[in-house]
Length: 558
Image (tube, rainbow, N blue to C red; front, top):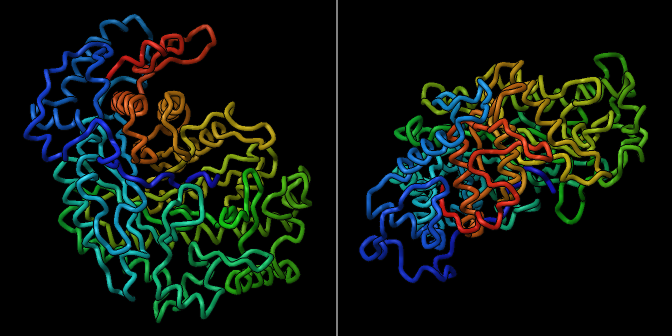
């Protein structure tokens, strides 16, 4: 349950969809539909039975704007709901709109460098456009693009995707993915680091993160060697920057116009963190505290130097000896227990060093990215993991091992937000869909408390906040929670939201309707009706009360 790993990677399979017997091109010439009459819920059983691809063909043939129909629906809803109170900061205007993006499958580009299943992708993008989605997100894998050798880049599969996205009037977020795909939740395909990088790692295993037992993690190069020429004469930071520069040159004409955001990968899963909870080979299981990743020779040398600098040489001999193992609980360890070593002078020294190294790593990569993309019109963003388990304890053990020095007494997210602000980088955060009540009691989770803290930290630092869902969810409850967290009642609201992930299941009946309703509501700025039912829960425009759930099954797109 590595929270921010992206799940299912499969595309829509046109052959598996029983409602489709022809290709998208065939539909353009042979399918016609009666006009859809707008209503508050668009109760049209025939329309609801169509697949999103068929509805998209209707959109193309009739050349009608679904969004115009939605605006008509909005007007009718406003008349009916005018007596309900809406808070002053939720007025429907362009400034409050929260654009929604959808993550594309991890294997969007094949190992051979080609666009995967282009016809299915084309149909899927048409459907997403019809739903009012702003755009899509794709991983630009280091292990695919630069696999043939240093400075030998192949962007052709991505070029085909960019052109297709532009054709459908969508926007694109591109992740500079300098990490491995494989070994975590949702990684159903395997994309390792470039072969020539793996060769260097085989010669020098200390190039990757290492735990106290000597386990090497090949997901990402250790930040301990950021500034050392360990990659055939280049430093890792130089390699990352060269990769981004090559991307800029290849897609210069699309940056700021079609490609509107570059998310800069800074660690495992593209997140600014250490690989403290690796799931490969059963190493870690939720809700284990994880382990510190500071035992490669470069990290050990840095720790030793930091200890000597303050006259505490003994503190530099390694990480905490009493921090337990991956699958323990805080109270089972001397370091993380309620009044453990984390809250001593030594604990403070180690945690400041460990988290400080991570922030310095992010600062170096983002400085390179800013130099490359400045003036292109594309936004920069970086992702931080939503590690919500053991959040209710004093030590926040799972966050500490991942590199976030966040405890009962110390705000670990403000320094990260301030570093992002320095480079004008959007702070992208996960677990926006989670509720405290959904989590197991023994894990001491509080995703809602964590999100509130991050919203306040980003507001204080003056940096934009964007969000993602951590796990694959299709239910109205999860979408409703995102709507709630998207608002700025306390701390920052969301500037954008990226939904995880496009796959065949997303386009199934109720799942698709929930997504369309969600996108519409986010386009209204996360508009919420301040009416409460008998249980005291908030209701959202476009979401049907539980007692009306059966009736809502007949509804089509809203």
